[in-house]
Length: 444
Image: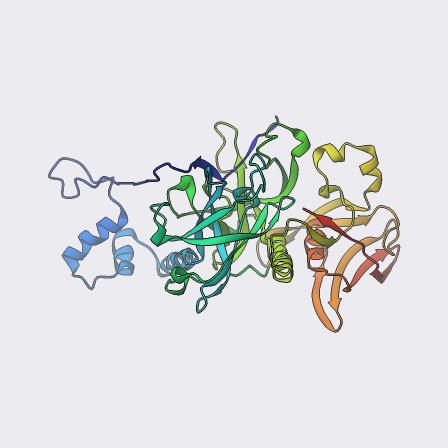
């Protein structure tokens, strides 16, 4: 069965009224109307409990007395609550306008912030700020951002600030926005989020996402990583929506956290509040739920400085970037993979994998064999790549074990012209270090 995948930016007419209100009925807690109060929330019951125990009665006491939470469970719950609320300070709603005709609504996350100047860098999805059906530039000419609590009315000038698209990659579905001199940011509680240091996100890891679902303002949803890495086909073209020729395969992780249109570009966080991915799509088949996807942080956190360096050097939007890379199978679209000429150019690929049980952390670890298919860049056909180190003079840029193919691909995004790229390979029965003469080529 061929699954359909949907991007999550929602598009609405510019002049539309944006209003989204929710109400929760609360009735019958005292039994007077014959209703048992099942529609009440825990917070509403807590307020009732305070009327009995006094205003100094804490939430922790309520959860322990009435809901039988253990001290360990309370610590876990409040730790997660603190992480979510802290992450709200980094999240933004995005409204990207194209030629003042219509608007794409999505989400974003602040990854660098100078409160004193009101400057910031914000990451989102490329498809939130890109539309190739528009005349002239395909990138949004006006972008508004909204902080949590200020995203109820998208037409309120007092509650929004401008951003400029300064970098965009269709290949990775990642875009970079720049905010300059925002008074709202200067006087806000906003803060920058940071990326998880771990390269691998494991199955079963608890995560949450914050985004502008359905354009109704930011909200948080919680779930697990349900698949640590896979490739999904997506077409972010608007002019050629049904054309397989415009499909790219994106390396993603899967989550069952609830996501909807408008969540595009919002961060996926771990329990510590660190970014582990950018939400970008979900399975669109009717009846299928809990299959959402995020561009992993291992790629995004390396694309960010690449885009930022390019903008700060040239002072303008850049949509093409240099990278050192092998020609690997997963770089190609479906149509390209079926081309015999392209197949003959593949230089490195995964040629098998095994899973081992990590008893200390109670998880399975996947290890792939990364095989050199043909002689290239100083490596020989049959070499197995096990480690990559990138240096800039005496400074170490990357020092990474290569246990998965995506680790090699993502790590090479950190390489710049003039860097030394050293591979540790298993060559027959020997282990050798090879300084490879990598070529740099452009990707969009």
